[in-house]
Image: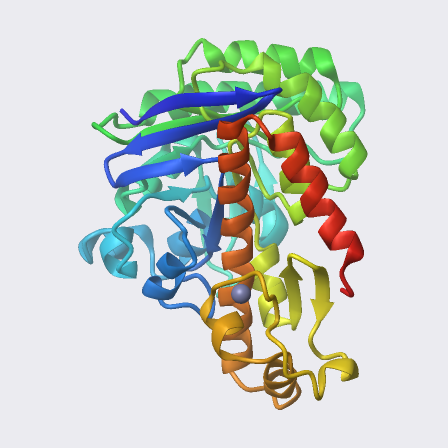
Length: 370
Ligand SMILES: [Zn+2]
């Protein structure tokens, strides 16, 4: 099974290393989202060059097209994507609830129709584990129900307990192999006692890591941080903690401060396709007319291809002209920025200066012209 070495703590913030069958992942880490077997607009080499050591694949998309069985026949997702280093796959559940048509959830699992061709499918905990095994995921996620927000206490309890039963079935269906692992997902909405019940039930199964689920679903950053303050200490210190679907650079800094080790989000890649840049000087929209004659680098503190070879004016032009290179260059930069942010966080935690690192980073965002 994969293992996790906790190397240092600074307050609640943690620096560690995940050791997997496909290589090591220094933490805290940000996982770029490779939705349908590709990080959009990026070659695998370009993703690696941003500093990424792990990406996320979406079970829902891959099970529908090209199908998990076909990916397996092609040698697995690592081979198909030319991505030999770790891959975490989600369970498919979250995207069924957000993308699929005519979905119906019961004790057995979720039945739904594909958003692509309307074909009928069922996803159970057992089938989700089988699909992730066929994909050859380094890290497999249990199937859960992401509790809607807001939810009453009763709604949150019913939903969390279904996820708990599915976690048990997911664990039983998981095929253990050296260097591979499976993460449980804590639910419980904004109710501390439900989060405690969820954590205790999951810990009985001794997962290789734990995700904190049901956050970043509309509750806002203050509530998310409050729930992380409560939830992270409920999880074993010697296992990695993953906050799913988060977030902005500021969300990442604040969540690392509260003991989170792993993140994924479409934000840097999606923003990269819509002319929004995350930089050490804040957020820019490169379509803005003020960049039309700006010959300076996008981020003078960034060593990526985009920032060392091109100007803001060129990026502005590419987006105005709707050239493919615009999203390619800006995705390269945004992912590099996220990787640099997490690498800087790791160095600061190891040095015991994480609070200073956060304060300095936030002061630069505030002082920038973004
Ligand atoms: Zn850059």
